Image 1 (tube, rainbow, N blue to C red):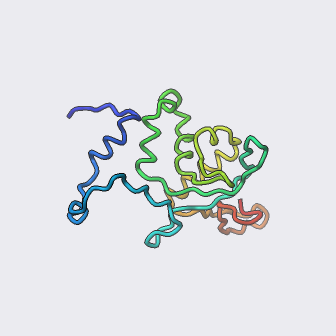
Image 2 (spheres, rainbow, N blue to C red):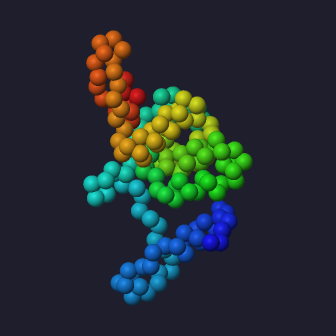
Length: 169
């Protein structure tokens, strides 16, 4: 078996070469001038929730001083998990993997829709830790709820970590 080195430049080429063959009805259609962009992630697709709202504990402060706390994260794909592994910043510092991964799956923070690694880098550590846990819950467990126990009455109940209302984040 021959090993192949993958770089960020040829990832798209490899993914296209290994993609499944198109269906016969698609093959009969004339080739389009440019491929249509993929539709944005939707909240529901065939009963599957693909985007999850969250509220950051502290909030991202942009250059103008505006605090952005509410945001959304989509489900991760296999490509999202693979891309950071070939990123040079991750190869130099493996701890940077979570920054790159989060920047790919966060669809918005407040009014910011172009979320990139630089934005995640400038977030407070509390918010990054929250987003890492949120990512794990959404992609591993499929929900944002957590079982908790009251320290006073020892009663157990569930809370939604997305923090839609005061006291739930």
